[in-house]
Image 1 (tube, helix red, strand yellow):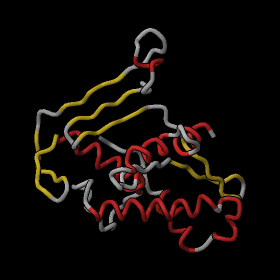
Image 2 (cartoon, rainbow, N blue to C red; image 1 turned 120 degrees about the horizontal axis):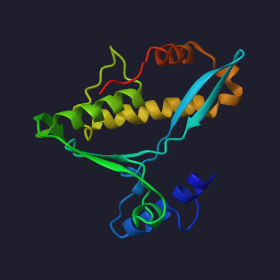
Image 3 (cartoon, helix red, strand yellow; image 1 turned 90 degrees about the vertical axis):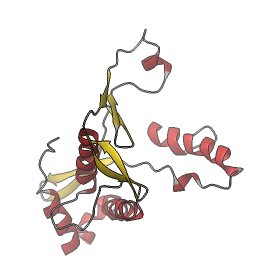
Image 4 (cartoon, rainbow, N blue to C red; image 1 turned 180 degrees about the horizontal axis):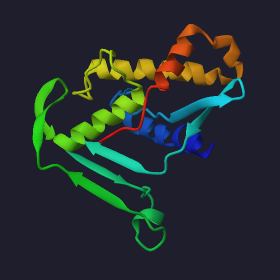
Length: 186
């Protein structure tokens, strides 16, 4: 409830405030800011149960070169240093490899690039045989693949209460595919 309210609901929500800032530039915030959540599924008896996964850690990957990973929130409780105890690590590569940003070849950090690709694979449910190249996180193909997966997963999640009505071969495929994923190795 509070996550949704903070992000989307009311005049002081993040999206509302960003919308006000972008309105003079005639830019739609939704074209640049998207919010997703991870969900898990399982069986309770013979019924499929789905729930959101709440991850407290935060991660920011910048241009496949630097990664910040930690638990600090962007507020005074976490950042002033005299209230909540938090930790953060910055990962900077010393080995550079060929990568891509916005359809242009660039040098990226080998470990950070690999970390981002592994996270995309895990979060998008990419398996062998999926025809998607995750080298360029800003390209249209990756964006469209992300949106399609999010829409499909949202469709099944929204119908969790009527799961028997949508328990089709396509949902069985999703469940079968998800059972093939193991822990990511970085």
